[in-house]
Amino acid sequence: MKALKRLHHHYISKDMLLRNLAIAVCLTVSIACSKKEATSTPAPTNPTPTPAATRLINLPAGWKYASLLSAAFPAGVELYFFDTLFQGRKTKAFCLAYDSKRSNIEFKPVLSATVKKPSDFYKEEAGVVYACLNGGYFGGNQSYSLVQYNGTIQAANIKSVSRNFNNVSTAYYPTRAAFGITSTGSPATAWIYHVGAGNNDVYAYPSPSPNVEGSAPQPVPTENFPVGATRWTATAAIGGSPMLVRNSNVLISDAAELISINNTSSRPRSAIGFNSNGIVLILAVEGDNTSGGYAGLNLTELANMMKELSCVEAINLDGGGSTSMVVANQLLVRPGDNGVERPVISAIIIKQK
Image 1 (cartoon, helix red, strand yellow):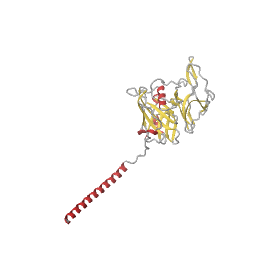
Image 2: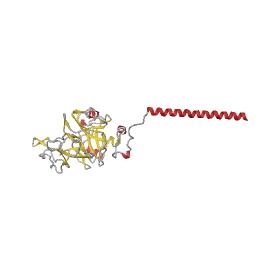
Image 3: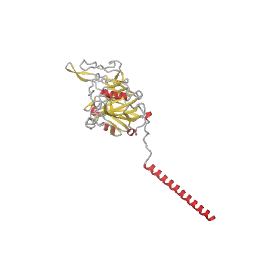
Image 4: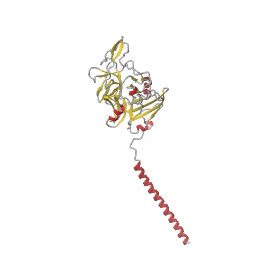
């Protein structure tokens, strides 16, 4: 019996020894694996994607949150994309939204002495850049639209255009749309005019000067005409044309603004606006790619898209081959000029302040 007990004790001790050895091996392997994992896969530094319940805007049907391209954005900046049917037509678009009240995010309109691609505006801008969208109208190396930054107006909205009246080329003086951000971060749109010789003498109007092509031109706008004029108080702004959404209603003032830009044709389009919470939205719609691609939108469809995205105010920017949006050093829409990005004179940059 003593021999059996000794044998039994021998097997128990051996069994415990093997069990302890196995546990030790497992712990060693586990620690080694943990160390390897931590070394080869460091903790991500990008912020956690914003939960859908706390998005900057409520996304309309068809729109999706671009989580990968938004990964490096801080809170208050988000990118969305659309690639399905809009009003019965195959449509591709990207929209960047940012909270204009956040002091760490900057809205920066930029002007170049010579035309250059929006992707170059993006690459050459110092600091942390989140997005770049083409700006207003131009011809050659001259801007026809407002470009304003840090309170300084670098380019004025066009002050006159020539139209035929009684078979004579006649000067008209349109008040054209502009989008701006005030010193407190509040967004605004208005029809504006640069009164007098000084570029900083800018007035905003609640309605456009009521020009009608083919009729006698309206007087040159002043601080008293059109009615309701106030000083333009934006410190950073971009001009465009025409107004698309006003007081939450689609209002396309192309006739009064004397602007004809294939208004009823499907084209690439660019726009900027804001919602009732001060969230600014910049939009690029792909177009002119008809070989199995995307035709684009007309102005009415563009206005409806901006309204569906929650805009209470929005203006049209230069479109067609000029439409280009850059995020994370990537072109988001295929350029309308046969896939080649067009050089432009101005752009909008959203960046870290």
